Figure 1 (cartoon, rainbow, N blue to C red):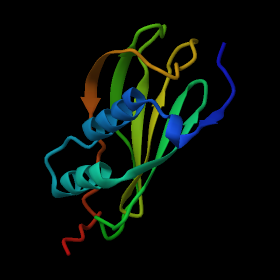
Figure 2 (figure 1 turned 45 degrees about the horizontal axis):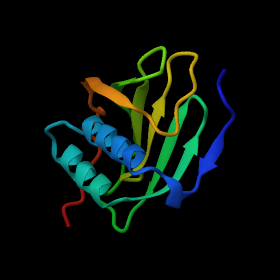
Figure 3 (figure 1 turned 180 degrees about the vertical axis):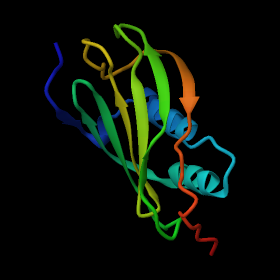
Amino acid sequence: MIETEREMDVELIPSSLERLIRDVGALLLNADTVQHRLLRNDLDAAILYRVVLTGSGVFAYFTHAASRLATGSTIGGEVLIEVDGLDAPAGSLISVRDGHVEYVEIYTNGNVSWPDHPDVVSLMQVLPLPIPDEVPTNTR
């Protein structure tokens, strides 16, 4: 049975969950373009300020000090995540809004709730976020 949504206090986010969120985010941005490199740097410098556990997964929201891209918003990508205790691999995606990594979403594809302390078996089948060619970079 899937639980109801709840917010996790930032101070109580397990380091293993934050590491998973950042690792998945980096994989979702693992392509050989200037935009992907800038967004990976943006994610590295971002502060995780909000985590919402939905029962079906997790939304991890970031805040940023400075813009890396001049404009552009997109959502997508995919990393499948095998987690001990889930009845199917979890999926993931990343959202970029106004040139920043806005959030990483991890979601279950089965009937078992996402655990607060996931025991990750593997990250697989990486499909990086497609970034439209018209998204200009801010190199200043």
